Length: 523
Image 1: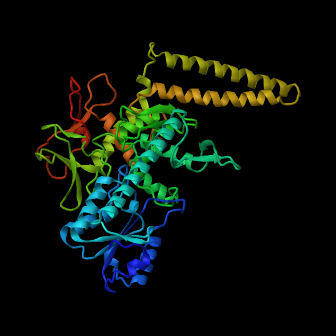
Image 2: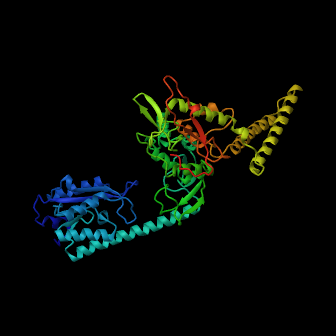
Image 3: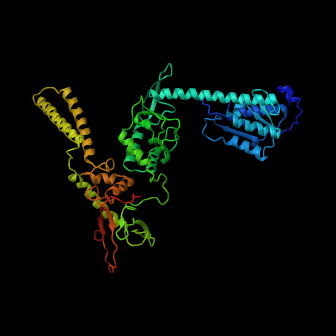
């Protein structure tokens, strides 16, 4: 088999029905330059037809993916080829390749394939050489090894160039890879060079809504379901789910920063010591406190990212507790028609679900309505004092501007455009300052969930179930005296009450507050 060229291959006097196999691979190629596995297959079939060789579909090992040592995904087809050679399942006499670097760009991996083929008496047909290459022949073996080594060197040099260019772009804060959801990129129409990355008018508001809803305690699954129902799809047209929303919200891109961290596998992982973080050249879509709060929620180890059939669907499940044994109460269906909160572990107490939830809801809303009365302005809170001073000044300016406008109108003079614009600016400034004052006066634990005060009942009615549970966890937590909340609502055990008499929750509950905050994390 030391002859070369198609004419010589014909003189090999191989039987017309000789069995051949093919390994067909291409890296992900969006340029259209590289030959696809389908194109490679057509070329192999033409060669088989020319020489009378036989190749079945089962003897085709086909895949798309990198063969370099820098690739992260496993190559299932190549691994199957090696396994078949070692296991005696490979019965072909010729292994067809479009090019040697289609096999592997890792020298050690390629040597294993060469050795196996040499041992089993299998030869290679390399399409770009238009010839048979026999690993038993010294010169052919050298050709196979040299081309594989050259391919590995080319990939290493290319990888180094790309890494250096990417690192340099990262230091300048330039964007990289795919355009993130929520943004769009503008390129020069003539040169196609990057000009800027800016918020997408359709996607950016949806992304910002996701952050707000997670902060309010809504589940990722609930958010995804609502977005899909509204017809809001991902950029590729697919549906939203809890996994892709969570992955999206953890990207530092939305903080307006560029992170270059080649060794980091996922946004769920912390940055490595080699990470380079620079200020991006694009506008952030979310402020840092919001992003950090959402990050803390999504990375919480106790968070259930996949809701199971027995997921929590009751307002107080795991929050209220048994007064006798301190175990949390869960909901059971008694006699297939009575929903009850029960002490599952010891069976100490049980109480009607709807009575207890209605009672607890009344207590929480009353507490939230009057909570602002107990929130004193801390003299050491300089930010709140500054906001109050700015608010007083803005209100005073607004009163002066509107009074001057009324006086001008009463005098029969034309409306002042400056006064109108100034009044509108002051209205916006006052609204922002009032919002900031409410945030500073609201305990941080409740911030983003609900605003205590007169409008709390309306907010509660409109809140998602998951948000209500988050609020209940805070207000009914077993916290020490002097801290936010009422304490843990505990249900007492009662004896026989007599026929027809129903003991209401107010008669058999109390609030528990420990002296020290040494309590189990609520689930």
